[in-house]
Length: 298
Image (cartoon, rainbow, N blue to C red; front, side, top):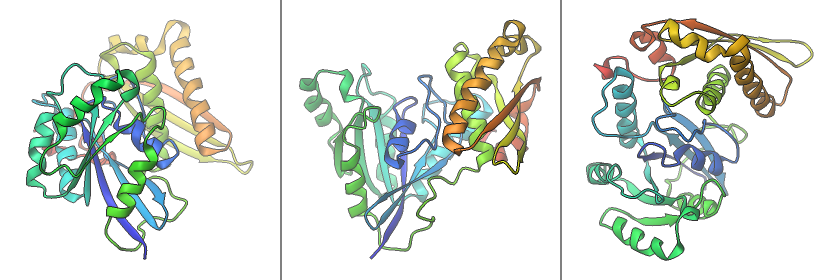
């Protein structure tokens, strides 16, 4: 009998949620960055384990007191994912000095009455003898299991897949066997470019940027031409993205193109334009395009 269910993957910003989902799926379905708050929208990754289909919901990082409209919408989206899920995974970065950001998430789990586990991630970054004390800290009523993993090194991934394959409810699969994500290709392409911007630009600027895939043109030879707009909020930010003689944006485009060729398995022609749109954070259409509620940020 087949099984299928939704598993919400939540945690503090930069705990390794996206890296874990990519490891479980076995392919890149969500972007990864060492900076916090990279994931803006809920993305579904689909993993298979025997007769079970695990639908993993990658959520924005949950943090206290979001200020900007976009931040509020992201946090609201993350909490809503818990209500809709069959199970919950709370990801914890054990390399941090304290776990204050994780505690509010754990306290709210009791309201959802769902099967919940804690995943201690990045165990390769701390001494092994410290792990038992950390695990005991997260052992409490309502937590069914504690996993110790390194998502980046794919250590412990199979144990998580086997656990959820056993725990999910019986039911038909909701996605075809070969579908790895619900993310449309146009949005995936925009996310890949945004990831490269996070890697290459300084701390604050990536959070003021929005990427939109303006056109997607496929040709008879199998190649695809993708045109994207990179929106910044101020004219002073535009030269930063462009770089001297346009070298920065060329490097961003080249790196994104290499990723897209690997993911799409076809030749890719990527064209980037940098534009100023001061009020993009107040545009309801852009929120809707990534599944966030515009009004939830009020």
